[in-house]
Length: 114
Length: 112
Image 1 (cartoon, rainbow over the protein chains, first blue to last red):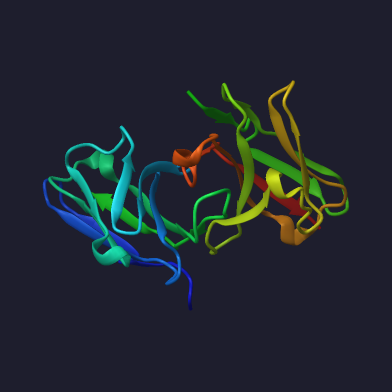
Image 2 (image 1 turned 30 degrees about the vertical axis):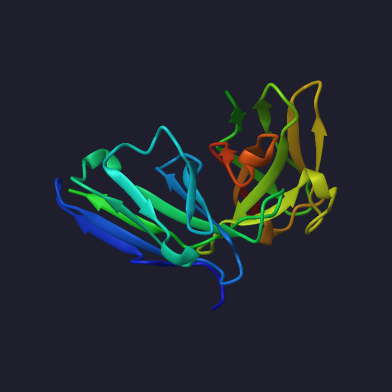
C-alpha cells in the first residue's frame, strides 16, 4: 500500500500518560497535515509541515501537543499528560504541493484516554 | 472566521432517486470548496473540488456565492453511494493550502 500510513491504529492510555503517533506520508509529498476528529464532528485542522518546517499550528494545539517531521519524511505527534478530552481520531494527510491539491488521508489513530 | 454547515446529519433516499446534500459556508473572501467522502471502512478521500469543475461518480456541486452554498447533487442515487460526506472549505492565499474547515458531515443511505 503506497498511501499514507499511520501507526498505531488504536491507542488506549491512562490519563496523565504521554503518547506518540507516527505518520508516513506518500513518499513524494512534501506537505503533511495533522487533523483531529471527535465523534459526530468533521476533522479539525491541527498543524502542517512543508518538508521539515512546521508552518502553522492551530489554537486547538495546546502546549501539551508537539509535532515533528525530521528530514521532511515521517512525522510524529506527541501528546503529553493526556486528558480525557484528548480522546479522538487523529488523522494524518499529505499532499504533493501547495495550491488546491487534494489531500490523501491515512486511516487514523484512535486515541482513548481512560 | 470560516465555518461550514451541513444541516442534515442523516439523509435517506431510494435507489434511483435524486439526492442533494446541503452545504453552506461562511467566509469573508473567495474560498475554495471541496466534497470529501468516507465509505464504510475506508479512508477519507476527495470526491470533487469546485476549482476543477469536475463530475465524479455522477456527482456535481455548484458554488453559489450569493447563497454561500456548495450543495452536492446526483440525479440518480446508487446503493454504493451510501457513505459519510463532508463539505470542506479552504481559504484563499498560500498559507491556507491544505488547511480545510470541514462541516459535521452527512450520512447518506441509499436503500434498494
